[in-house]
Length: 88
Image (tube, rainbow, N blue to C red; front, side, top):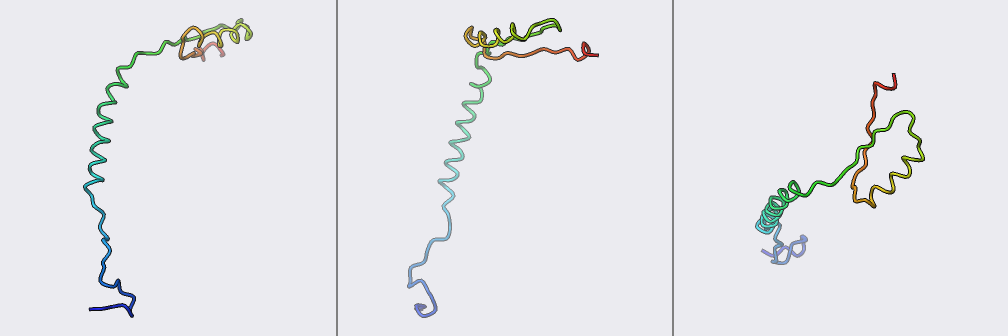
């Protein structure tokens, strides 16, 4: 049957289906990669950190001098410890 006048496809049908095999292959590869890298992330060496606890008499300039020195000393994280009960 020839459908040129009705807007037919001239005998060449387009494949409307997407092949699922490559998609499944990619998903399985990603799954394996994530399964291999996840334990590596959990067993990484812990990064050193400093927890800074200062009283009300501490001067801001002394704390400001400490903060740039921490990364130079190899400290990855600096945290400030607060005591909410002290402000009451």
